[in-house]
Image (tube, rainbow, N blue to C red; front, side, top):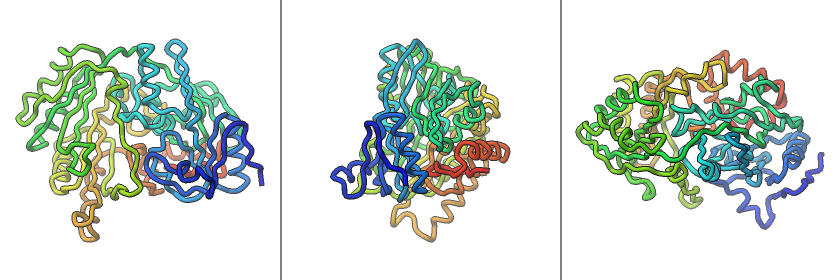
Length: 438
């Protein structure tokens, strides 16, 4: 047995006074064997040596939004204290435990931005390693596309500085392959000038189909400064008003240009302007409340997919899914632009030809979903997913180990498995959409 002694971090075990607070994460309550709150890179190395000696799986926790935090047992490696953000010109060094809201606020002080997720409390690590679709995806690509280097602690405890020239195989896998290959204790991003954005919300009533067709046609030739989403949610949560909306973000402060880009949508019956104005980028990131243990979220029957094209068939099926299931959600986000500029084999992220991300699912609420209609709902979703090219791992609440085969093609899976064999042959990092060592 390896002694679990840390430099400045702490170890929390069941029965300790702070156990209950330590095992709570944003999306639920964990039941790990032990929690290591790392404060230094040496703490991370000590935790990995201990986990390997005790044959314990490792779950790395940053923002705490991952469903994998609820899987019992193993070592939870909490990186919350490794949250430093350091700006050197346009180069930004971000600790592995930082959250995107904090990063956005610090970068805003320098007139800079990095395309991140939509939620302030989401961890930089999990989002980036899984790819990272965000508001500037069409202008700057994924969060992983803005990465220029990383400090990685491997399963053996080696500390590697990784970039396109140093350990290029690992560099490829880190950008879209998830947390399978080591603990990233520092991310190095190339930031972009960003003073303001124009943020707009359009209310939508009536049939979704003409709205979605117009949204698709508008984005086909839209400037890369513009990204849009469509969301339709049920009346389930007072923090999220029910109904359908289109949300748009335009990089810069040109309200006139943003309004002109939205004009085709505003001409559709049932679409109206709710909000349009110049905002600071950190202010448009959502604040998602943490999970309430007394009111757990219901299950989710559905999924997501990266669509090469948002065809009329896809629109019809997505709209019909939402109409047929009262307690369901429908979400779409525009891609293309810089996202598609990256060659497919340059990173591990799938489906670079995709122009839309789509997600739909019914909440498994008693009285609305039961054993009789649950398979029918899943079959409806499966027919939609069959139109797409790949699943986006960051946007699924499921810990089904079989999902990983729907995230990557055979060539990418083989390449990822080879990298996994080199850097984590014992599969220490398996609390994720796991790539088994070749």
